Length: 145
Image 1 (tube, one colour):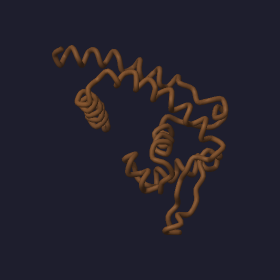
Image 2 (tube, rainbow, N blue to C red):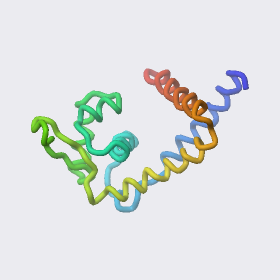
Image 3 (cartoon, rainbow, N blue to C red):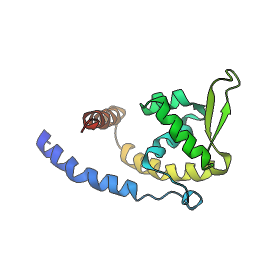
Image 4 (cartoon, rainbow, N blue to C red):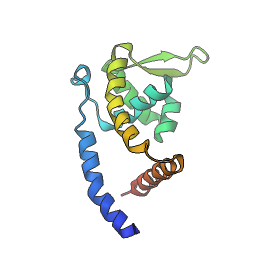
């Protein structure tokens, strides 16, 4: 496949992928909450990596700590996240998914993980790496559009 054919295919495919992802509703137990797409990455990091400080979340999300603090504050007020002082450093705040919502959030994210598993399992490890790096480069290239 030449580059122009690949570009055409991706320009036609990506809107469908994004549209389907946006239509993936949160579980019923979270339906009444004000969850936006930006919250999904934050929740995914907490699911995959466990509770962590705001600065670690900001680093992973590649945004300013104040942005993460605002999102965490919003989700904490809604009861989706909980904050606690770090036992090792009482000045730091550790963020975690509230126990009442852990199962629902895990189930919600599992649907997307299952779709990615279906797409990535047939690939070799090198093909997976190239695919992920390509998507990351595309995201970087579209950052300032």
